[in-house]
Length: 477
Image (cartoon, rainbow, N blue to C red; front, side):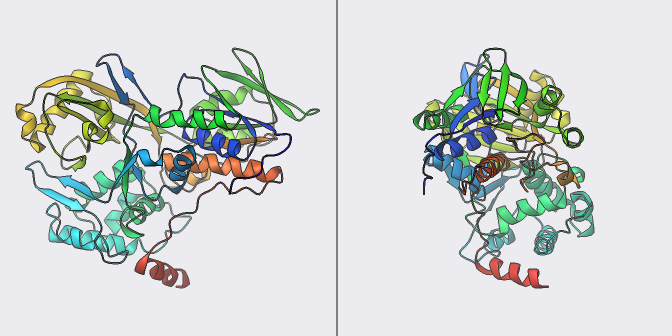
């Protein structure tokens, strides 16, 4: 139910037009507040955006952002702005070996958590020993991870007898790439979250989704939503400092243009951008603690190679590529029919790879094309018409053991000021879901302080089938 707008709406300035800022702004605008979404660039989306690449004269996403069904807050945000139908969903993950053998992981009619078992047992990519090891690990992940655990995923996998095949072809590819980090830099808590969401809780939670339009086109609808609800977006506006007026209980936001006045502020910024802004914020108790928390975060890169061939090289929409430097394939020509590609438009994604990110453009593209030809014979005869290399060096933040202590909640050290961003305490790793959840957390807390009991956080998908029973049994034990 849409909240009743207040008679004299308060003004909220949301600084940062990424997923966190957009989700917070749209939720509050729907609640009847007047929102100004402030973005330093001339488009929305932050790291989830697209642009016209001058080298190839094509609109490309800065990186492929895969969704899963468990992303309830991101899906709620997309539903709010009317673009949920622009997400294409698939229940399956196709894994390909260099010799062409395919393994399809996905659900069966069996109840959760057994729904993925038949295809795992039939998987060509894994030996019998690998399958036993994976089953052993999945069973262990039914039990909750101690909140104070300092064990990293690599140590946990060794302790649970994971084989080389299971590590190389499953944990390093599916999990390490999902969390965009090396196994020894991943918290077991977050690895367990990914495993349960993708493979155990329910078939719906494990659905894989991707946008059928460029990401910036997808997120333009946020501006349209804000305009329709009496709010606005301010582009090309760099915030230099903020000043709090105790007498009027208002914020003055100083920019390179005219200053803005707002009753409330949400700082929906990446951690490094907030760190830069901190010296230009008013003194307050807790600022040093916040600065110390920010300093504990680090970024991990994601690289993507965009390739245009003169012919189709595969009928697959997406695939996991085994045993090579390239990790994921997205057939953007099929997934985004707006592109009207005559041949193939393929995006290859390389996660958690500092070595690939260090390669020069030609070297990186040549390596990617060479490996692609091992998986798809049609690529050997195809003509490569153009190519682009994108290095998103600040793609995600790392999730090592203990990182939750460095993730502040949405309440900032300053009055009438809230934090958002994928890196704050959402309980999720560095994903668009974490960003959307952070935006909804900030919007909900802000509304509650005003006496409005609006609910913006979306509920998680509940475990289904036997998984719901097993969860209750584990909780009692």
